[in-house]
Each structure stands twice: as C-alpha cells, then as structure tokens.
Length: 145
Image 1 (cartoon, rainbow, N blue to C red):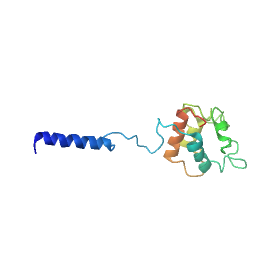
Image 2 (cartoon, rainbow, N blue to C red; image 1 turned 180 degrees about the vertical axis):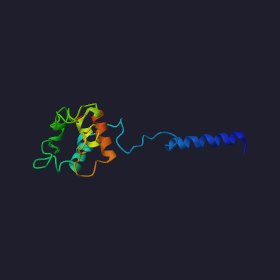
Image 3 (cartoon, rainbow, N blue to C red; image 1 turned 120 degrees about the vertical axis):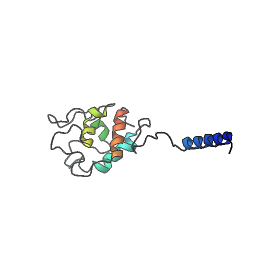
Image 4 (cartoon, rainbow, N blue to C red; image 1 turned 60 degrees about the horizontal axis):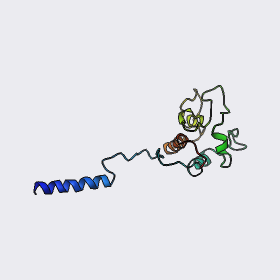
C-alpha cells in the first residue's frame, strides 16, 4: 500500500468517526441539555403529576403546595416556601437559579436540615433525568411554556 493511499484511507476513517459522533463529547447525562428549551407543560408538569400530585393536592399531606397542572406554575415561581425557619426556606423557584430554589433543594436533598426527607416524601426519589429536567427548566428562566 502506498503512503498516499494510507493517508487517504485514514482521512476517510476520521471523517466517518466524527460524522457518527465518535471522538467528541455528546453531552451525555441522559437529562435535558442546557440549550434545548425545557417546556414546563410538556416536561416539568408531567414529573409533578406522576410523582407529586398524590400528596400535593387538596386532601394530601402536602396540600399546602398544590402541584396540579392548573395551579402548579403560579404556586411555584417566585413564591415563598410555606416552611420557614428550617432550611431550606426562601423562594420555591428562583427563575434562573436552581441552587437558590427550594423546590430543587427539596428534590435533591441539597440544603435540607438533618432529618428532613427528600421529596417525594416516603416514595422513591425522582430519577436523575427528572432532576436534571427541573434544574435546566429553572436555569433557563422557569418559563411558563
């Protein structure tokens, strides 16, 4: 095989690897990425409906924060936490800042006082993908979309 032929084959192989996604970072993680807009109604509310509404609705143990689809956005974004004096306290969703959002702290355990349960309380934790979706939605400005 001539040297120029080997170089040509190597060039084709290199193009093929990069065209198929090899050799670079695909983003990974399995959750929402930071550039694709996260829809509240299409991505975040279904997480609440599946995992939270059984308690966070009238008659539930978390009824003080109603997360049903017609009320959840207004009850979360820019609203003070009903629990004060015990970390975390503050604003439930601080648009653009997941780390300061009590909602995010409650679903991840970040900033919880000793003995406080991660939400959903008494049930399996949200998947990493669901947590990432909520984090990205908050960081993108917590739009009502």
